[in-house]
Image 1 (cartoon, helix red, strand yellow):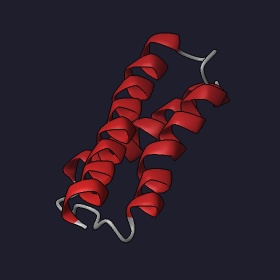
Image 2 (cartoon, helix red, strand yellow):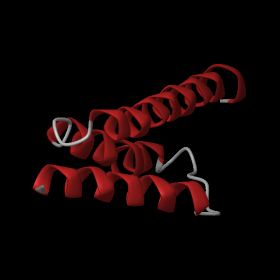
Image 3 (tube, one colour):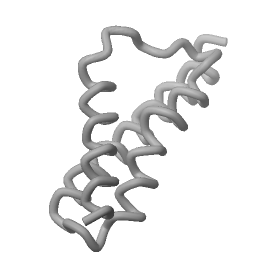
Length: 81
């Protein structure tokens, strides 16, 4: 039962990030990636045996978000800086 609670905490963090109107600047990007993307992934990996489908539905969008943010950051470094 406690592993399912971890997954729901990850879901709450993901929903909070989705509705947060503030977007990270490039100076604080790594902090945002860790707090708002990595913590839900870590919680889902720990609680994966509780509910595999819900954990997968949280892990994949967060991984795609990390890849997108890092891609934008690399393009920013290559072309705008």
